[in-house]
Length: 494
Image (tube, rainbow, N blue to C red; front, side):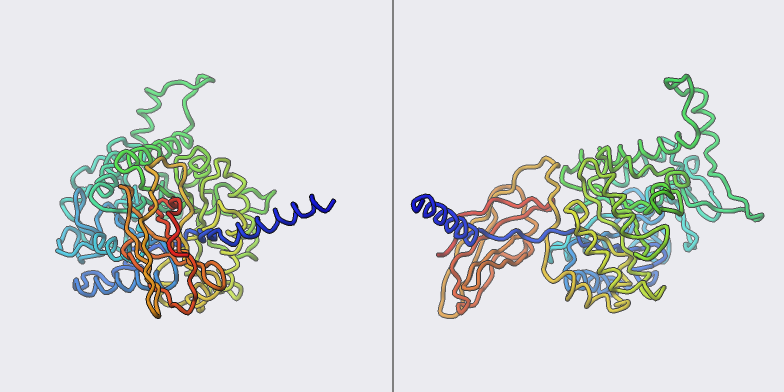
């Protein structure tokens, strides 16, 4: 009996030693903020600001994101068939220059990408695919789609809208999106909840139906019959057009750049289900947005339903909704909900701690480990003390994003690492190996207290550690923009 017991004890000791010599898993979580440009919600704070002020505001945005340990900025580049970047196909935005089509030398998107990437922060380009004019705008350019292609634009209440059922309208948006993906080093393409518009009412208070009669009548004349010998209903036809467009966007974005992800942030309720305690607006019926389908058929790389209600809210309780979305996630993609930082203080129970509680609930599953805050100015204005809550309570450590390991790309190689010891410092240096670019490096160090790690942007290539930590080993891995981590290289030091 003694011999087997000794073998068992030896195995346990060896397992413990192996664990002690293994680097910890880097924290993974998607931590993002929306930067809205429509109506100057977040950037720029006013129309027609001088370039230096625009530059300063963008620097403040990325610096705050870095301070709060966020790892992605979702920047609205196309609020209403216009451009908050150096235009290729659509005119400069009025929200930027003060007059639609008025040019400026400064390119906010290029500047933001450079500064964010330098700090290890991803940038997703946020497009409104259908909205063509917002009531907060005052000017119009001859280069706007409503002037160049009026046949694909519909006046709907107080707004203009690209017709989701018009192939030329879909092509217009796809061309704009792929133009940005080609010309800019964006890490993702993002849509919000605007597909068919939220309902407008006429002077008598009656809901206005969206004016797609012409295309609907054409469809009825030519539609192929289904299994029961009937064409689609009008509602299903509208949803099918939206879904077809979204599938085309996903396909074309990946065709241009394989490693640019595609995410959508729909209204938080797909359809009400009173039996589950879910009531409210029906986005499937009213916006013709089959967001559950996009998740379940793998059209999107991530879905961010806007769960803008607190835990105590009857009919729209955050825990009930996030659990419902988890149950729909049959492909085990990512669901990173939108959180309503802007609502802090709107009710006695909607506090920064409510946001903290919601973040903790997303951590119940690796598939929902992430969140997007609406919007940046709520963080900037430190509503309810949200900055300290994020940095000191829920985001105590830097994180890389969860890996999009289903997107086929070249494997990232481990960096080449050297370590130099001096009297008071241990300096670790590394350089990239292979053609797949790193977005972050993770520096794991083992000292007298065990393993720890730091996440550093790919713009950095060295780190100094104090000698009094008695550094035993250092491992550096590379992580690409999709969250794929390299194998560790040979251990430096020892």
